[in-house]
Image 1 (cartoon, helix red, strand yellow):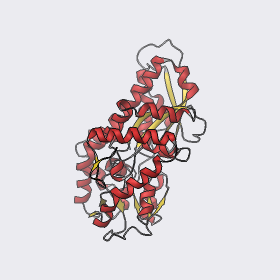
Image 2 (cartoon, one colour; image 1 turned 30 degrees about the horizontal axis):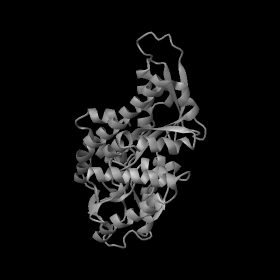
Image 3 (cartoon, one colour; image 1 turned 135 degrees about the horizontal axis):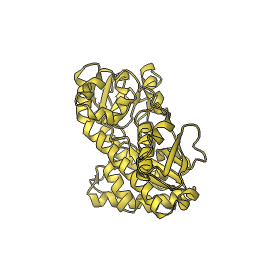
Image 4 (tube, one colour; image 1 turned 180 degrees about the horizontal axis):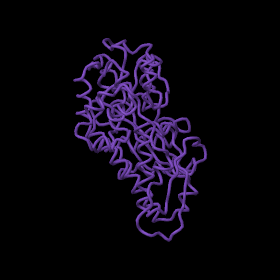
Length: 359
């Protein structure tokens, strides 16, 4: 399911909502989409091909769409000279990797600052990009990633998450206790603090896991991306606010030796194409959000529910404690946290648990 094709149709929201119980169809083979038709201009420069390893299957609309779009945009911008060949089998030593930085939290927990923090601690996609591009975040990210041999770039976003998709009615402060919730990053700690059991499930299996009862609730980005993998059709309730409303950013990591061999012009090309795909993904999610969610609710079968007040009141305090623990990991985490919180303060984002800017 190509989100761009979806957005071109004025009646697409209703049509997509009517078929929300189905999962996304398999996409065109990765190599074909990544290479596409030959560029019209004659290019005498040698073609360079690189492997772009993905952390998700080619059938996962949303994340996989972003990878295809990135590969296509780089090919077009380089006149066919630079090509990314998508690989779904191995991310261990690939030249390029397309994944959320939450997947590297085991290497260092501060990587999650560059993917998305829980509840009130998170920056929305536009503010996250602003911190990384102009607020000092990129330099800190480069330093942290450099210790693991790569150069990171923002390359997509799943959009702000408007709801938690659930098959359990959450009507009391204890409603999350014992529930299995599929969620990523430090938001897993937030779910655990509320008594839930966080579980990690690949995007390709989220809808099936929710429908079968393997999990009780799921959070997965904007409604556009949730619909692309069939979550609304598998859920009975759309609960707001979710635990991770800011959503999840996607990064493209370039192996350091490959990055240094590219040269300044090609480094700038990769950076520009990645930034373009990131901004486009946010714009698409924002454009479709209100129409899609309202259409789903209007057609029936999905009930809007408010998260219990006892839970929403606890979210700021709990998320602040989780981030404070994350920031205490080591000196690198403290530097990243200080920059992140200073940027929040400059934006005038107050932390409700203190009623004043977080310094």
